[in-house]
Image (cartoon, rainbow, N blue to C red; front, side, top):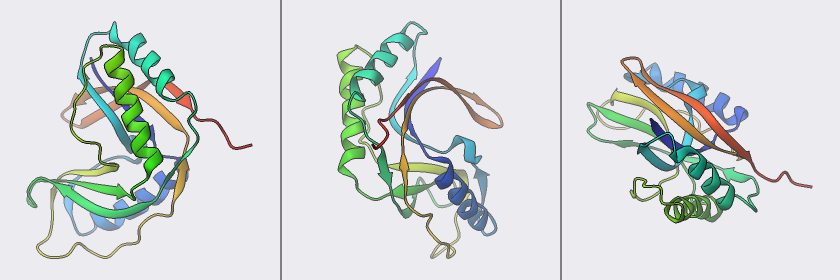
Length: 178
Protein backbone atom coordinates (compact mmCIF):
# COMPACT_ATOMS: atom_id res chain seq x y z
CA UNK A 1 0.00 0.00 0.00
CA UNK A 2 1.08 3.57 -0.73
CA UNK A 3 1.08 5.98 2.24
CA UNK A 4 1.79 9.61 2.99
CA UNK A 5 1.30 12.01 5.89
CA UNK A 6 -0.24 15.39 5.15
CA UNK A 7 -1.48 18.57 6.72
CA UNK A 8 -5.09 18.85 5.62
CA UNK A 9 -6.06 22.17 4.09
CA UNK A 10 -9.05 23.66 5.94
CA UNK A 11 -12.39 23.78 4.08
CA UNK A 12 -12.51 27.57 3.73
CA UNK A 13 -9.09 27.56 2.04
CA UNK A 14 -10.01 24.55 -0.12
CA UNK A 15 -13.05 26.48 -1.36
CA UNK A 16 -10.91 29.52 -2.25
CA UNK A 17 -8.33 27.28 -3.94
CA UNK A 18 -11.10 25.66 -6.00
CA UNK A 19 -12.20 29.09 -7.25
CA UNK A 20 -8.59 29.94 -8.15
CA UNK A 21 -8.21 26.56 -9.84
CA UNK A 22 -11.31 27.15 -11.98
CA UNK A 23 -9.91 30.54 -13.05
CA UNK A 24 -6.65 28.91 -14.08
CA UNK A 25 -8.43 26.02 -15.80
CA UNK A 26 -10.10 28.53 -18.16
CA UNK A 27 -6.66 29.25 -19.66
CA UNK A 28 -4.60 26.15 -18.89
CA UNK A 29 -5.13 22.59 -20.08
CA UNK A 30 -4.36 19.78 -17.67
CA UNK A 31 -5.79 17.36 -15.15
CA UNK A 32 -6.94 19.59 -12.32
CA UNK A 33 -7.05 18.05 -8.86
CA UNK A 34 -10.45 17.82 -7.13
CA UNK A 35 -10.59 20.14 -4.09
CA UNK A 36 -11.17 17.23 -1.70
CA UNK A 37 -7.66 16.02 -2.60
CA UNK A 38 -5.85 19.30 -1.75
CA UNK A 39 -3.27 18.78 1.00
CA UNK A 40 0.31 19.62 1.99
CA UNK A 41 2.48 16.50 2.07
CA UNK A 42 4.64 16.45 5.19
CA UNK A 43 6.24 13.06 4.48
CA UNK A 44 5.79 10.67 1.56
CA UNK A 45 6.22 7.08 2.72
CA UNK A 46 5.35 5.42 -0.57
CA UNK A 47 4.86 1.67 -0.99
CA UNK A 48 5.03 -0.09 2.34
CA UNK A 49 3.55 -3.01 4.24
CA UNK A 50 0.26 -2.75 6.13
CA UNK A 51 2.15 -3.50 9.36
CA UNK A 52 3.73 -0.02 9.04
CA UNK A 53 0.39 1.71 9.69
CA UNK A 54 0.46 1.45 13.54
CA UNK A 55 4.06 2.69 13.56
CA UNK A 56 3.17 5.63 11.30
CA UNK A 57 0.28 6.48 13.63
CA UNK A 58 2.66 6.39 16.62
CA UNK A 59 5.05 8.65 14.70
CA UNK A 60 2.25 11.16 14.03
CA UNK A 61 1.18 11.13 17.69
CA UNK A 62 4.77 11.63 18.83
CA UNK A 63 5.42 14.51 16.41
CA UNK A 64 2.16 16.35 17.09
CA UNK A 65 1.99 16.22 20.91
CA UNK A 66 2.02 20.01 21.29
CA UNK A 67 0.75 20.98 17.88
CA UNK A 68 -1.22 24.20 17.58
CA UNK A 69 -2.99 25.18 14.40
CA UNK A 70 -0.66 26.16 11.56
CA UNK A 71 -1.26 29.36 9.59
CA UNK A 72 -1.26 28.75 5.84
CA UNK A 73 -0.69 31.83 3.70
CA UNK A 74 -0.80 31.16 -0.06
CA UNK A 75 1.83 33.29 -1.76
CA UNK A 76 3.03 31.78 -5.04
CA UNK A 77 2.12 29.64 -7.99
CA UNK A 78 4.83 27.31 -9.24
CA UNK A 79 5.51 24.26 -11.34
CA UNK A 80 7.54 21.10 -11.30
CA UNK A 81 8.67 19.79 -14.66
CA UNK A 82 8.48 21.18 -18.18
CA UNK A 83 5.93 23.84 -19.15
CA UNK A 84 4.27 21.47 -21.63
CA UNK A 85 3.80 18.70 -19.01
CA UNK A 86 3.96 20.40 -15.62
CA UNK A 87 2.72 19.77 -12.13
CA UNK A 88 1.15 23.08 -11.10
CA UNK A 89 1.13 23.93 -7.40
CA UNK A 90 0.11 26.62 -4.96
CA UNK A 91 2.92 27.51 -2.58
CA UNK A 92 2.61 28.77 0.98
CA UNK A 93 4.67 31.47 2.70
CA UNK A 94 7.63 30.35 4.77
CA UNK A 95 6.34 29.35 8.19
CA UNK A 96 8.73 28.06 10.86
CA UNK A 97 5.91 26.11 12.58
CA UNK A 98 5.01 24.30 9.36
CA UNK A 99 8.64 23.51 8.57
CA UNK A 100 9.15 22.26 12.14
CA UNK A 101 6.05 20.06 11.87
CA UNK A 102 7.37 18.42 8.69
CA UNK A 103 10.78 17.92 10.33
CA UNK A 104 9.22 16.40 13.48
CA UNK A 105 7.04 14.04 11.44
CA UNK A 106 10.09 12.89 9.47
CA UNK A 107 12.22 12.48 12.61
CA UNK A 108 9.47 10.40 14.23
CA UNK A 109 9.14 8.21 11.13
CA UNK A 110 12.91 7.65 11.22
CA UNK A 111 12.77 6.83 14.96
CA UNK A 112 10.03 4.25 14.29
CA UNK A 113 12.01 2.70 11.44
CA UNK A 114 9.71 3.83 8.64
CA UNK A 115 11.39 4.64 5.34
CA UNK A 116 10.20 7.84 3.62
CA UNK A 117 11.19 10.07 0.71
CA UNK A 118 13.95 12.45 1.86
CA UNK A 119 13.28 15.20 -0.68
CA UNK A 120 13.43 18.60 1.02
CA UNK A 121 10.10 19.83 2.35
CA UNK A 122 8.43 22.52 0.25
CA UNK A 123 5.06 23.77 1.51
CA UNK A 124 2.76 23.41 -1.49
CA UNK A 125 -0.51 21.87 -2.62
CA UNK A 126 -0.76 20.36 -6.10
CA UNK A 127 -3.62 21.85 -8.09
CA UNK A 128 -3.01 20.32 -11.56
CA UNK A 129 -0.98 17.58 -13.22
CA UNK A 130 0.01 17.22 -16.87
CA UNK A 131 -0.61 20.96 -17.25
CA UNK A 132 0.28 22.69 -20.50
CA UNK A 133 1.33 26.14 -19.36
CA UNK A 134 1.12 29.14 -21.71
CA UNK A 135 4.29 30.86 -22.87
CA UNK A 136 5.10 33.88 -20.74
CA UNK A 137 3.21 34.84 -17.61
CA UNK A 138 0.42 32.81 -16.09
CA UNK A 139 -3.07 34.30 -16.28
CA UNK A 140 -3.95 36.76 -13.52
CA UNK A 141 -5.77 35.43 -10.47
CA UNK A 142 -6.17 36.22 -6.80
CA UNK A 143 -4.40 34.20 -4.16
CA UNK A 144 -6.74 32.67 -1.57
CA UNK A 145 -6.86 34.21 1.90
CA UNK A 146 -4.83 32.75 4.76
CA UNK A 147 -6.37 30.10 6.98
CA UNK A 148 -5.35 27.97 9.94
CA UNK A 149 -4.91 24.21 9.46
CA UNK A 150 -5.63 21.81 12.33
CA UNK A 151 -5.44 18.24 11.02
CA UNK A 152 -2.49 15.93 10.31
CA UNK A 153 -3.61 12.79 8.49
CA UNK A 154 -2.11 9.48 7.41
CA UNK A 155 -3.47 8.78 3.93
CA UNK A 156 -3.54 5.68 1.78
CA UNK A 157 -3.15 6.63 -1.89
CA UNK A 158 -4.54 4.50 -4.70
CA UNK A 159 -3.51 5.32 -8.27
CA UNK A 160 -5.77 4.75 -11.27
CA UNK A 161 -6.13 6.06 -14.81
CA UNK A 162 -8.42 8.81 -13.44
CA UNK A 163 -5.77 9.95 -10.95
CA UNK A 164 -5.12 9.32 -7.28
CA UNK A 165 -7.77 8.69 -4.67
CA UNK A 166 -7.03 9.12 -0.99
CA UNK A 167 -8.38 7.33 2.07
CA UNK A 168 -7.77 8.80 5.51
CA UNK A 169 -6.46 6.06 7.81
CA UNK A 170 -5.81 8.22 10.88
CA UNK A 171 -6.21 11.90 11.75
CA UNK A 172 -4.74 13.88 14.63
CA UNK A 173 -6.30 17.25 15.35
CA UNK A 174 -4.19 20.08 16.70
CA UNK A 175 -4.88 21.72 20.02
CA UNK A 176 -7.60 24.31 19.56
CA UNK A 177 -6.93 27.80 20.91
CA UNK A 178 -8.41 28.54 24.31
